[in-house]
Image (cartoon, rainbow, N blue to C red; front, side, top):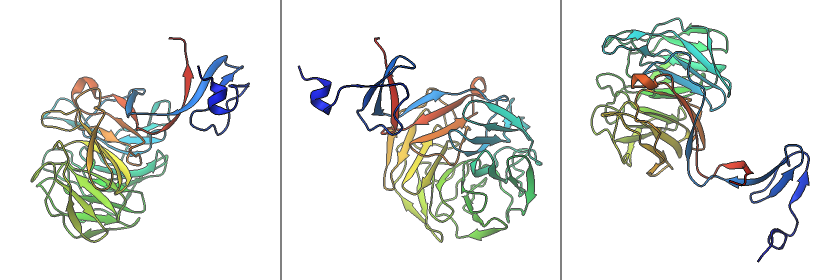
Length: 329
């Protein structure tokens, strides 16, 4: 029988603190915690429950990462007579905390941003068919009103991507094919999409983005933006609207959930094709993604149906490095 030493050239290390930069396959015994640990990578993507939102709601917007996130606005049931919200909640990797409200009551607004201290919200509605043009910027403490959209729009909660100084969003109720780009001060109208969409999902950067799903035309349709024009690319495997997702580039994105009816599907984008991966635990639509997440690590919160409106979960993608503790079970 081959031993660990024969394979790796050394015995299992005995240490009182975990190694700073272990390599994949390295194993050690920690005498402080009295456990055997090792470095591995995940073989498949998985979801993990995180603490619930303080106030469950639907069709809300989000910003940030899996450990530094912000969600805001949305509506409370009952539907179709919803009560719009100004609520904002901040996530620090351990818990959600209510912070200062947005100036504008809204649901179906767009949101982008890098963390729980830097976010942008725009558009939305108080009630069906009443699009807003207001834009607000979050500095970690307060929301400040800044320059408005050129065209008031709603049904865009996941249709934007970028940062507080460089954001793009497209679509809206109609369905709309309009696109606007934010430079940190003003919104500029850009070339339109090939197919108008509402309740679509966008990821990437303000000059290199992907938009997919949504209502209007085929709900599998995906388009790529190069800073000037939109180009049709390969479709989703499962069409749906009112999903949510994120990604840092045109070659790294994830799209989750949606309707109709409610879906549990999750797909990842590699720059060319969509691939089905691990489903979310419950069918759902209208949740908010931390828009600075990726196919390796992201967080989402809220969504419909009502019993899961305060749900929050993180995603860890395949191939992510992890420290694992070995047990005898």
